Image (cartoon, rainbow, N blue to C red; front, side, top):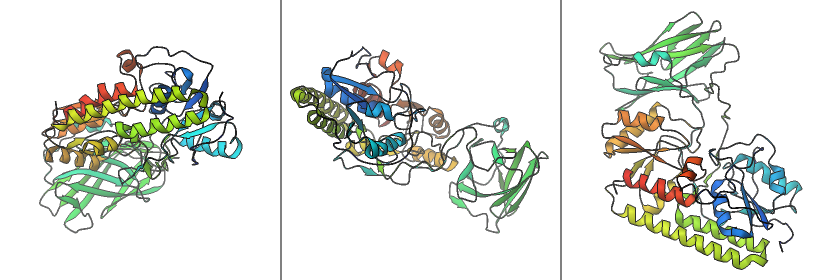
Length: 469
């Protein structure tokens, strides 16, 4: 029998709540229906934990994935209250890592306050030493819309080696940036009021200090809705009326040369505050906590997560101890075999450097097998790289002579394609999966499971990127 519900291996955090059960919650490795049982009912907070749990529980119960198919596991946000789904299950499997899944943080807080005896809480990350985040996470989001004026940009007359320009508001948040022939975060939103931005310039030789008398910043507006003045490294905008304009920015180098940015599209209107949300309802205060929860990218650490789930299920349902022991042992064998395949495949590689033009999901994998991952994007799938980040990625690719740039399926290939187009040594892009969600196509192709994604998608991708084919 299943023990009285209680809280084990649990942790408390804080954040936000809502929604739907995952569409693939009853699919096996090959996409087949797992069926249902009258045993223990488990609710998993996202795909990877669903995978680990269903392989331990087997026919002794059912597992449901909270995140719908095709949605990014840790960034998906529900639209309705998820608490009933959590407390109506026998156990809830999640990570007690603040900010990893904000809706889970809030759910756990509410369970601890009002439903402590209703559901077992299983923290699958318990006992695992998690990596602390470095400064890769960005606190801003950008639209990658490109204004029509971007495409006829001609830089043939530019003599200054400027490779990126960033515009930051008075809070130090980037609101627009350009690299190459286009801007990110456009149109720049300016209120019918005054707004100032700081101009930051990055060159192949370092930053340009516009407060130096050697340089002069010029701005010219095409349109009547906006006025702009320059002062050293500052653009002072004055929105005069609702409308759209373009702004031409030039940097003069002591009369001996100069550089002109692509035309900057600006939208002037009441309610604009200069923040680059541009139609996206992103929270600019979103945080990912202090620790990287994505240990499951490492097949060895993934085994520890499986053992934690196994032990919790045995404590919850001791009558099926042998079932959980046997199932977990079999799945751990599969994870050990996956580790051996990665170890063997990546041992004879040409170099130790990878550029991933997506959010930072594979640091544990890189640490396990001894290579370096450079990413221009932060930890969130909503983060977008600016001109400086893309320029740095291009420089990294060229410095190490890399041929391939990886991209995360759930982020899309745009950034990777930009880097490949600008890096002299790069020739192509290669897709990877963060292994924290699934799409129907992968299920139909027979590699929709966690193991399938790691072996059939990620291993060949890293082999190619590291020159280990």
